[in-house]
Image 1 (tube, helix red, strand yellow):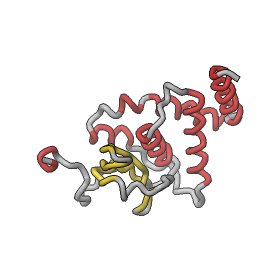
Image 2 (cartoon, one colour; image 1 turned 90 degrees about the horizontal axis):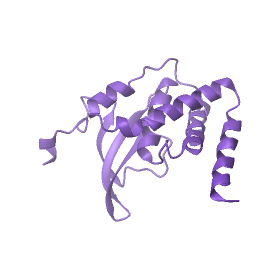
Image 3 (cartoon, one colour; image 1 turned 180 degrees about the vertical axis):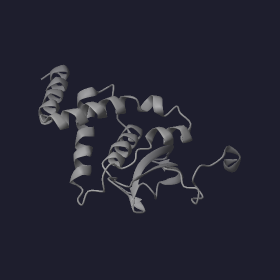
Amino acid sequence: MNAFSSKLHRRVEAIRLARRRADAALLARMIVFASLVPVMMRLRPRTLERLLRRPARRPEPASLDGALRIVEHLAMARRIASPLVRPGCLTRGLTLYYFLRGAGFDVTLCFGMGTAAGQFSGHCWLSRAGGPFLEAPDPRPLYVHVFSIPFSSSSPAALPRFRDLA
């Protein structure tokens, strides 16, 4: 099987999995949102927070089934709409943050900098109840927390100013 037919087969299979109308609508919204992440990352952090602000429409689900459904749909969106939907922590983090908040989960989007595999890099991850959420392994030993969305005025790392970093 050549590369083209393999990609096509994966995309058709992902579309088959999203048979129900609600699943197809969620998948379409995720593809649009995730494809806009590179543009969103050019915004100032406060503007990005306002854009991502989404009040929970219903109370937090009792189980993680809703969260896992959203994670599965993001994986399908990446398979169907690649290269429009980019791989990586930014696409994953922002998309999951937005859709999980809409599903009622109280999550925080954390950004950090550190040295991983001998190279200085950045990473973003979700946090819930004080620890990483849907993230393995725990990024905190590798990355120093720089700021979070939503911003917290009580957090010392809420939003650093340039002069604070010098």
